[in-house]
Image (cartoon, rainbow, N blue to C red; front, side, top):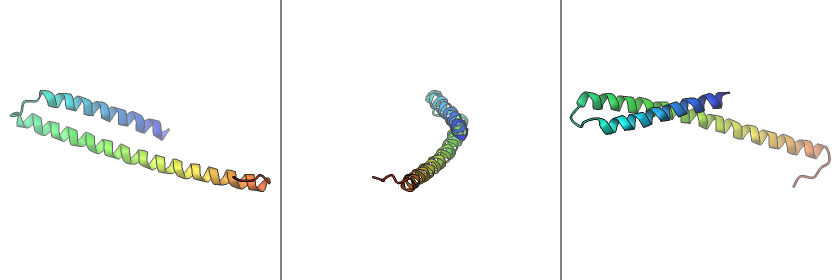
Length: 86
């Protein structure tokens, strides 16, 4: 299921971000190479999280459209059977 895969990927990215934050706390301010590597890792993780967010937004949009269609179908079937719609 796509939602479960996105959730697992998102969770992994969040764990990675947490590790990067912990690593950032230990880096000395004058270690330019480590700081640049850390910035690159944080940016890569951020982009991954943004991709996951966009995917989840798409899934939510699709679910909303489906729910609306199901509601319309239900109302239509109730009208055809003579039930009143409130």
